[in-house]
Image (cartoon, rainbow over all chains, first blue to last red; front, side, top):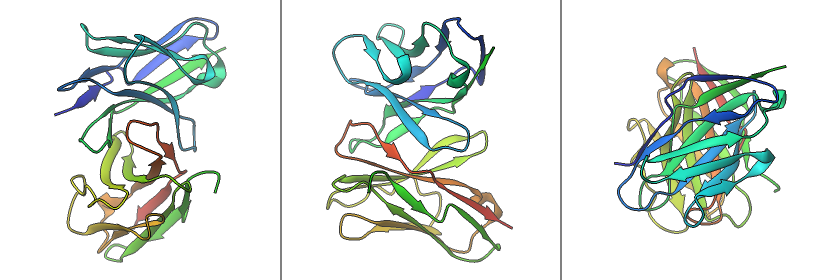
Length: 113
Length: 113
């Protein structure tokens, strides 16, 4: 069965420093991977996806993610964190054949000034 | 509309009552998904509609839960004989096709007292 794991419940970063939010996956076949962000009291917003092609995927708000097949990882990164990046981040993998996504439990990112 | 609309935004109901949650997806989006977000539990897939195909109901937690989608557009999630453990935020999402990013609604916060 397809699954994703987000090993960190919370990540703390100082503003201006690079950030990484980790995600590992388990799939049979080619992985279709996604990142979403949820700001407080808001719905989830799509950040980026990997379907095929370049291992480094660029998305919204300056975020990028690196697909690593050998390590089965899809970590979310940003070179310089902003306080406004503080939110809940979800990694997801396509589950069933019809395309529903399976989400990780989420990682709370806290960026301090 | 411009986004996915869910109503009501908040619902408080007594244990044992039935509730209906509504989702109005983005016009033209053929895929519609329902998820449940409980505190500390991440997003739990409930049900998925794709065009005129039979829905994927594999995520529904019990036979008290059902959903329908009329005319390929609006969807209603019904929970019968609500229990306290049904308290959660119910999220609806739509997408134009498989492997495309979802657009989520703001959710319905259900509280069963």
